Image (cartoon, rainbow, N blue to C red):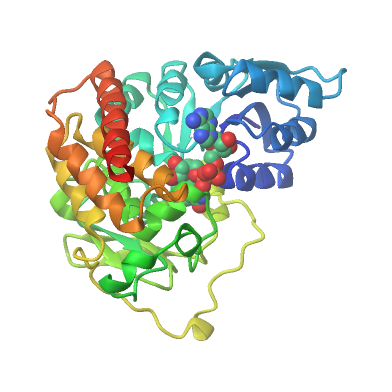
Length: 387
Ligand code: NAD
Ligand code: MG
């Protein structure tokens, strides 16, 4: 029996995880659930899964949530960053699933590690911002870190859990997103609705936009650098529009081991929660004869410059990946809000990085300061364009 705290329970990853948990009541219990503002959805999950604790973004939403719950329910409602930390560290939990979106996941995840919880991590922004700090704490606290991102789960599975053993390089696959076959001249007219239509994966809106710019793959390159302790020049991105090969590892003898499956996050989530055991899931295997063809190509960095930017920021290290991440979060939010064109996303991130004075050996305070500075800078750049 494993007891879980789920940060970001109402999101795409959180809901998939709770579906799996419902299917295996003898295996999993829920200690705490969190959401930002979606109190109705969270209330339903609380009634269904009976956590001891639930957290939302602020006191207002906590009050709204209270009014939606039956009075006899034994659940403590908390709020704000301290509330998220309480959920991440609650004594009953053995493992924390980090399924919040964005930088908000970092501090609660670190608190969970310090409290000795095993971590299943979907929230890649945490590793992008502070990979070195997170990995050091994981080692120091002796807890387990399981990747939930499908590519990283695939790499982990292709390494059979033995990182570093004769590995030549990692091949991170990318679907290429909805604009893989559009010419650059067509990019000016891309709307949020176009970008939200991902060909293969159904996900939250922020990561869906990241997939359309290939920033998602850039964030995943940085995530892989930390999870598997491998240099950037040994992490290659390969576009594979069928999204069946979830990623691959090339070994010293030229052998390549891949992990495959249909594009459904349940496999990676369940493996993250129950490793080393594989759970019997209601997920079909790929029908290879029907798929017919696998294709692979290099990413086009001219049309998708965010990927190149992520490599640069990752290689610079220190506070730069946190700046890349924060500027991207601000630019994506502005794009979704129709305040920035699709083609404006990359320039905002690039200009924010250009203005940043990098800090090497950044500690957590430096990272959080860089995050705040980059948000302010990116917002100002966008505001100036609007005027
Ligand atoms: P989502 O938008 O569907 O859900 C996000 C969840 O986090 C919600 O419960 C929301 O209430 C909560 N949240 C949002 N902002 C918050 C904040 N500021 N503070 C506290 N809570 C907040 O997102 P998602 O698609 O489930 O993605 C979650 C994370 O998993 C992201 O980091 C994403 O990159 C990663 N991921 C997602 C997928 C996928 O298939 N959806 C795949 C791989 C990795
Ligand atoms: Mg992924």
